[in-house]
Image 1 (cartoon, rainbow, N blue to C red):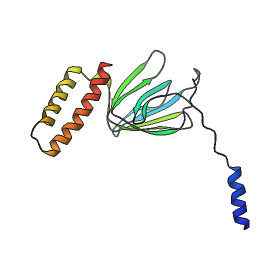
Image 2: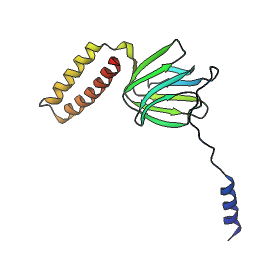
Image 3: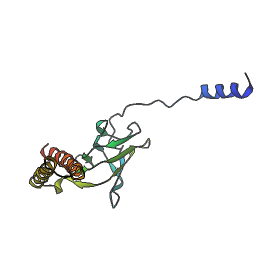
Image 4: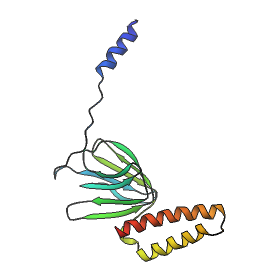
Length: 163
């Protein structure tokens, strides 16, 4: 065995990956630093919050400070930001990504988002009915594909509003 191979094996044996743990309940002093941005504006920019709940493709997640670092693709759905025991805000996102960092920061990049309170159930139901009508009709493949996306988003908004 040559010196290089022997040195590489010794070095590799001495490198141990850092242990990974599940998040624990955070104390009042520990906060999650949230940055939540859209292509055209920042909703939160490095703001300390208690918890963020989001709908990822791997499942619904509750994120606290000291969460295991990960990157998650977001489903169309609700992001709930718990700023404090008294203040909670909900946003509907069309999709995007959430990056949970080892320094207790969370970056959310969404294509589009709006406060859940900005939606009316009646207008969502009207939009859903129109999308379903186009989907069931004799339109082109492009029109049907667009209607399918619209229907999926309207259904997700409707579900969020009726929870």
